[in-house]
Image 1 (cartoon, rainbow, N blue to C red):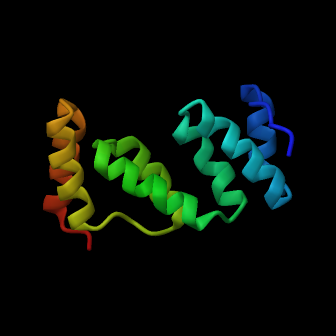
Image 2 (cartoon, rainbow, N blue to C red):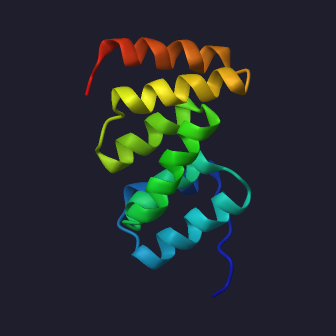
Length: 114
């Protein structure tokens, strides 16, 4: 399969808003992922109904302490983060020196939105 190119910002917006064939959406998501642009890949993974890939990104977000990515993935999955997700993310964020994400994760864990 030919590699998809990453769309510009305006084209990306139009593509996300229209119904893409799952294979095309997945190809665009893969192009983003190849460049480690995970947050931008999320919408296209959702359009492709690539639940397995979204689950992998969810784990990656937690393991890397990336609260921004976790929020994007959980919106796409329509499954909010659990208290445990936030606690694990906070620990990982601390380990990676991401103080702002660690503080946010602890605040969310304390809210207890299980």
